[in-house]
Image (cartoon, rainbow, N blue to C red; front, side, top):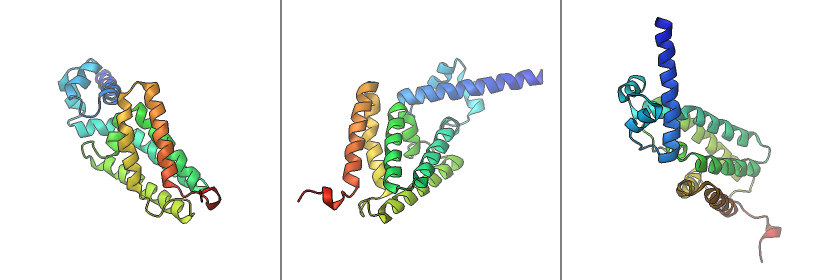
Length: 193
């Protein structure tokens, strides 16, 4: 009997995480917890038994995504060309943001604080700082560029998530291309006289 109870609890946990992922992606992180429970087909008490706070639910939903983001930054750092690595990172993060606005909000620090999630976010930001320093050292990135500028782009890109998917993708691609062009130093041979 105990194994069946654990199995039910695990199933409910997974349903709640899946529902939260869907609801947060569609409506944002400020969606009421009762909506998450309703979407999962469970009572709010069941939700709070598994996740006593919004922060705990947010961490369960997005920790894997944040780990994936850290891996993406590591891959960009591993590229022998820091410009190419940074461009790849910016393109991919902008695309992911359009598909799931809530993850970007969690990454940008608009999710409730939770130590384990915050530590992973800090690690990702440290890696981003390393990538920016490397791109500057190569001479390709503007000296006044900072990792915070990536957040500026993400905040601007965030608004597109509310648009229809195809329009959002087009607008996001355009913004990302303009942002990248503004951030990198053009080779002297390509600059206009």
